[in-house]
Image 1 (spheres, rainbow, N blue to C red):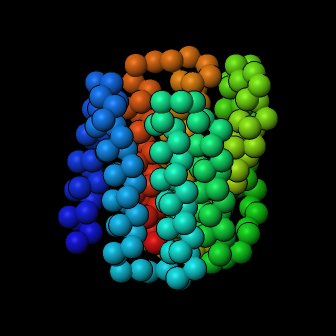
Image 2 (cartoon, one colour):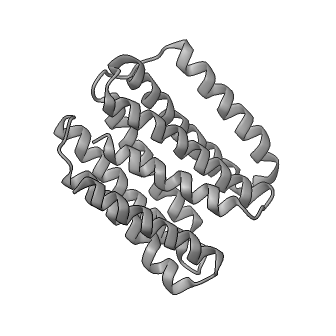
Amino acid sequence: MMSFISIWILTSAILHIRADYAHNLPQTYVFKPLTVVLILTLALTQSPEVSTFYRDLVLAGLGCSFCGDVFLMLPSDQFIKGLLSFLAAHVCYIVAFSSECGVQAHLGYILPVLIVGIVLLRILLPHTGKMTIPVIVYAVVILLMLWQAVERWGMAQSHSSMLAAIGAVLFVLSDAILAYNRFARQFTLARLVNLSTYYLAQWLIALSA
């Protein structure tokens, strides 16, 4: 069942990326939310290897991500609503990742995350204008998500924690590409890299549940 749903996730994601580049809005409106719904279905149908609390939080995060995707694909500019939806998703993931081992703080994990955050903000902030505060808040939250994911992997050394940590890294990469393309400089491959890393990140986090 898991492999079957994963094939449908891959197919839907490819069709969404293709629709985006073809500027085919009807197909985008179908395949963008469908891909996340399929990822959510994957998390619901697999045999859990973690606590019910962890799984429920991942499901809540995927639900918030679905809302964020819907807001961001609307023809009117709903960027703030999309940002808030993904902010809520990351809060769900933070709580999930810290639920097993508690909030951990090891310099070996904190320092690389801080460096990534500083570099990203130094690149983005000269271009964000009135969006500076929301961008900083979002960056702090997603970096907290990454930090707790890698802390959990370091502590638990489980299959679930490995999948979630890799997913968190890809999520940060995806959002960094999205923000760079929106605020700093647009480039042709941005949507391909942003969407492929985003769907892969969500897929891995769903598998971690």
